[in-house]
Image (cartoon, rainbow, N blue to C red; front, side):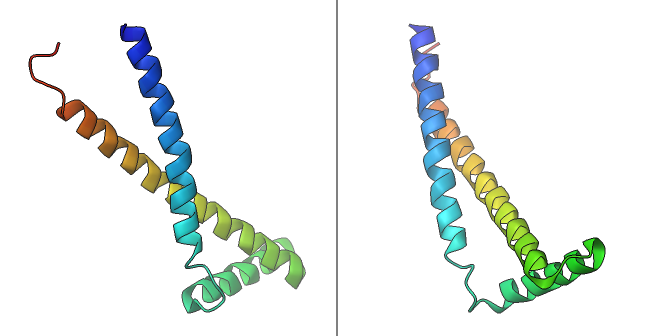
Length: 101
């Protein structure tokens, strides 16, 4: 019975990780528009640094900056996802009756 409970818990955590990562990524990506001056300034700064450091043309430097922005957004979404999972595990473990072993 313990193995079954562990398997169900792992499956639930995996499902939550996948769903919440997608949710957080999409929520963060909603704010990454050309109307966001902080994002466009960051893209211009990174594209300029990539062009200078690696000798890329403007198109490839902009593509490298977008790739970095995607990676940063994914990293932040995953951080938020693991915080959600830890909170779910905490609430599940603290809500069990005290008399359960």
